[in-house]
Structure formats: structure tokens, C-alpha cells
Length: 614
Image (cartoon, rainbow, N blue to C red; front, side, top):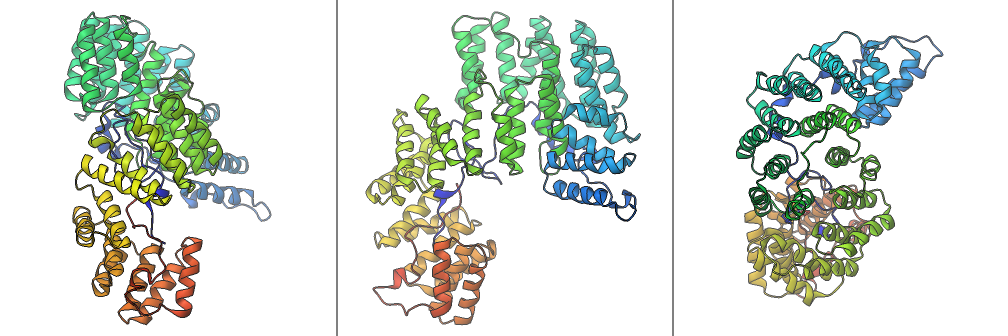
């Protein structure tokens, strides 16, 4: 019955293997890819209303009786919008427009969603019918500019995006696009001046300094490229794209040793990254790397990717998706833009869309392995477990030292209760690490869970202890090992102290508080169990396991009515099938009185601690 972190999907980790805090367990975390991501903090006021809000129902005209398709398609579009299903919403709004072709709100929503879902041709056609509303037309102007750039009409692109530059985000976008159109015309002075004369929030400089540097590098002005990118690097030395561009500019200006030092510092402070590794190898081989972007269209794509990444937050998914789709329109092989767009769909729990995007990242991309790792996790989320395992197995066999792939494979196997196989996968990763350090505690922790669940306790205990050597007082490990000892009646004083310390370290973690309460229950300290379990239920009122635990504790202190209430709530909260059977039995017959022989298993629980998902 107890909740096991073993079955949780993993939070995305860096190759350095530190677990990340994140609200969504399958969220991609691009490793500091976009310059100026801090700009997202000021974008709440910059987001076009038409890109984030559904149409006003009052704007839909009344339809004569017998003609129901408009209302049906409109309601379906609204439902798709509430579910943030951009592709479905675009299709339903398109169908609604067939019945009400002049409705301005329908046109706006159909345009925005067509663009966000990647149907650029449909969006372009709808853009011509848009009413003169500034917010939506800014996005339409940007879409038109992208099409102009594809045709090589730089002046037209510059003009149309400039006409709609009203507001901070639109102004910044227009400046970046305009600068690259001048670069396409080899007008270095005009390109840099377009960036240098932009006025607005201080956070603009993260973009303008960076793009000024890569424009100078593209146009062959190595000294100016180094100067501007050095400023960007000094401000944000851990930003992947800035480090990449600066190291390239240094190497292209004959400073290969200095470039290697910049890359080494990134690896030492942030961790390994395939883009950095590829560049390091290229410089070490004595080759002069190309500039970060090799043509103006790629430069605009870089800008749109960075802006889309910065605004990809709750409430702005459509706008972020539109920017990322336009980036991919200009640069279809941009692995970073594709990964960002796939990550956006993952956060919306749209694994099918994420899979479609990830499968298009070419095997020649430095991000190919990262893409395949995320592909495996998304296939597993779609219940395509065999395909997921095949993808991840191949990655681990190719390179067992790719610990992200190892962690992903182990997580997929654990989610399918294949614990022995998961332990073997983690062992491949552990064996590839010559000198494990604090970053690697999670490998031993997760293998320990796999060993414990496959009834290999001695191996599990050794792994938990090793994890605590690498990361003393790690609360998840303290909780798991301490609870397991209590369950087995071993090292009771030390075990209870460990679980209490885990609670002290994570005092708002309902799972770990539940573990402490359940530990008291197992020890027959029922009043103390009630106090802790009530705290846990307050934090997680709809968790079936915690409610079931509190029901057991209430029963043992004689609060029978409250016990049945908690069990009923647990029953109605979608417990696991095996747990449901036990809950129904307790509702029917209650629990036997505690005895020294049965106090530890009065509730018929599985010997595994409740823990926060890792």
C-alpha cells in the first residue's frame, strides 16, 4: 500500500545528476540554453491577449435553428483550449469559421492556434483576414516576416515586423529580426546600430549584446564579436548559448587555448553537455569552428528560440509555441528549438505531440541522445513500454556512461515493476563511474529501491548507506532506509531518528511526514502516529495511501467513526487495486486489536516507505 518513489516518472536531470525540483515529473530542463531567460520575469505584461485568452462567447453570433455545427465546433474548440490542446483547438476553430467566416474572434483564435500548432500556411492565410487589433497583428506581422525571410526579401521582413512593434516584447523581437535582416545585406553598422539603439527594460541587453556578438562573428568582425560576447559571458557565464558563441568567437580569432578554458569552466561548474563536448573536440582537433549561426535565417531562428524559451511558462504556452514553431520554420534542424517545443508539450502532458517533435531531431544533431532519452520517457507515458525500453536500451548499450539515459531506462523499468532489470540498468551506470561523488547519490538510491523491491535487501541496504556517504542527511534516503529498518524491527532508535531528520529537512513534504506517522504506527505509538498522519492529510487531502494510514491509526486509538470516514475517502481516491481490496475489507470488518505479534502489520501493509517522488 505504501507509496513508492520507484514508480514515479523521473524529473529531468543534468548529466551531473543532481535532481531538480519541478512541478511536473517529466519536464525537460534545457541546460541554460537561451540567453536572457530572466526576461521571462517581465513578460507577464508583454503577452498578446489574443495568444492566451479564449474568445468571448458573446462574440459568437446566434445561428438559425437546425444549424448546430458552429456552436458544436466552438464549444469543442473552447474545451480544447481549456485542455491546452493547440492542434485540436486550431482544427475546431477552423471548422467553426466555415459556418461563420467573418467572425473576428474566431479568426483570431484560429490564426493563433494554427501558428502555435505549426500550420504556418494556414496561419498565413488567416492572417490576411485578421481584424485591426494590435496584439494579434503583432504575431501576424512576425509570421509574415518569417515568410519574407524564407523568400529572401529582407527589406519586407524588416518593414512588416517594424510596423507592429508596439510594446516591449514586440519591440525586442523587431530589433532582433531587423538586425539580422541588415546582416543578411552585409550592413554591419546598421545591424549593430539597430540593436544598440533599442530602448527598454534592462533585460533587453541580455539579448542585444549576445546577438550583436554573433552578428559580428557571422560578418567576420572577430574583434567586435569577442568584445560583445565577452560582456555577455561576464554577465551570464553559465548560459549555454553564450558560452558556445564566446568560445567559437575566441577560437575563430586564434585564441583556441582561451576558448578551451571557457568550455572547461562550463563543464566544471554546470556539467557536461553534448554541444559543449562536440565543440571541445573540434577545437582540440585543431579545427576552426564555424560561427554559432551560419546564415541570417538561422540568426532569426536563434532569436525566436530564445524568446520562445523565455516566455514558455504557465499561461503563455500558445505564444511560446508560436515563437518556437516560427524558429523551426526558419531552421528545421534546430535541436534546441525542437527540444524546447517538446518540453512545452511535456509540461502540458501531451506526450504524443512531444514524440512527434523528438522523432524529427536528426541523429547527426549533438542533442540526438538527449532527444532519444526524452523520446523513451514519452513513449512510456503513452503506454508504449516496449518501444520505450528499446529506445533506452539502445542508448545505454551505446554508452553506459550516459547517466541520464541510465536513469531514464531504470525509471521506465521500475514503472513497469521490472525491478531486477532496473537494478541491472543502474549497475551499468554505476560501473561506468570511476570515482562516485555527491552528484551520484541518486544512482545508488534508485538502485537500492530496485533491490529492495526485488527482495534483495542486503544489496539495497548497502546502496542506501553508500548514498548517505556520498550525500549525508539526504532526506529521501534517510526516509527510505529509516523506514525500512523500522519495518523490519532493526536499529529502531537510529531508524526513527533518521525518519524524524528527514521530516525536519523537508517539513512540508506530506509523503515524508506520512512515513514518520506510519513509522510510529508500526512501533505501536498510535497517538503519535495520529498527530503526524493528520498533518500529512492536511497537506495531501486526496492521497489514498495517507488517508488509509490515518484511518488505521484512528481505529487503533478507538476513533472508529473517523477511521471509517478516512477509509471511505481512501476508497474513493482511486487507490491501487491491491490496496482497494484491503481498504474494503477494513470497512467491512475493521482491524484486529494490536498485539506484540501483529502491531507492525495490523493494516496488512507492504514493507515500503512512503516518500516524495524523486
